[in-house]
Image (cartoon, rainbow, N blue to C red):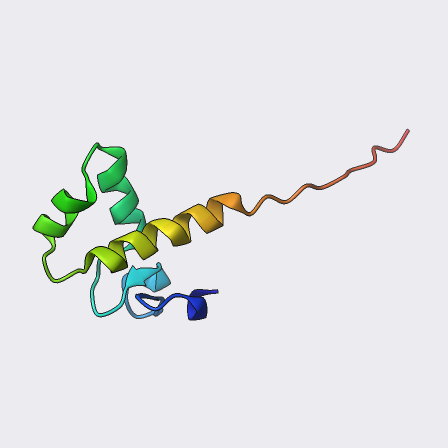
Length: 79
């Protein structure tokens, strides 16, 4: 799935394979934690100036895509 994302990668040797911004140890989940705490993209970029705004936006798009993936399971109970 990450092959469709220019700025993201996953490597088992880096953060146990958590999706990260390429060339960094900044995970998608860390970006989401910043946003959840009220930080703006500008504030995150200021804290990590080596990350582009585009890479931060892509991390958010990736997280949104994962959250959108709903699976419904129909289970029939035995009588």
